[in-house]
Image 1 (cartoon, protein in one colour):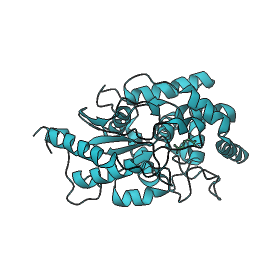
Image 2 (tube, helix red, strand yellow):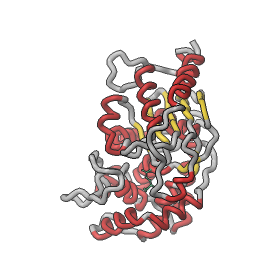
Image 3 (cartoon, rainbow, N blue to C red):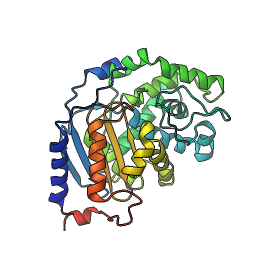
Image 4 (spheres, rainbow, N blue to C red):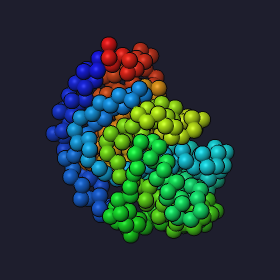
Length: 320
Ligand code: GLU
């Protein structure tokens, strides 16, 4: 596909869906309810570092659950696969992202993409005290994004003062010995990681870094050990889209993660990362326009991983 064709595809999708007003912005974190629901941006970054974007691409928003993917990578680097598996499972769940459920046999949270699993994952992030752990987390995001990132203090404090379900999950996991650090410190770190500010292009660069074996295709900096890419992408594929993950895998067919901010990242391994931002969510918590855009991109570009006639869509092709 020629470069101008991909630009045209993104422009067409933006035009087609910008009038779609289904869904509602997340309100359970009071600060999130203030977002402009009309915001809409789409960005694709190839593994060669080429950037294609349309819409409100410089608009900042908090990363929310998309952060879980990257925190999982850091926990794997800190402790290795075998240990992390003793604390967080890899089973998909048909329950909501904030369900207060642990595996009955192992007492582990089901997977790192739901809140309980993400809190357990964040509790594994190493560091000597809250500041060092936060700095390691921010530094990890900097590697994936390519510039310094900041925590939105209003969103962080808003969630910290209202996140009673998350606090309940942390206490349940403490009861079963699944979390053995200071839980208030780990909850703070979890709320901070969710409140890291990004724009749509940042999402696509982060996604492209995962598509590019862990190397940021723009800065050429390694963000995560390549041996953990398969772990990260596997849980994204099976668990990344809340209780829509199965249908997403069936219809769209690429690893992805969404967040209640209205962002979605999707990864086409060895080819590209996709970022979409539009804050109105469906009943499961996925961006309504974001799901539509990814569905059409997957169909039009033949991105489904199990598509027999799948194109090996490289940015070299974009220029032909
Ligand atoms: N910070 C949010 C929470 O813990 C993240 C939820 C999400 O994006 O799915 O509820």
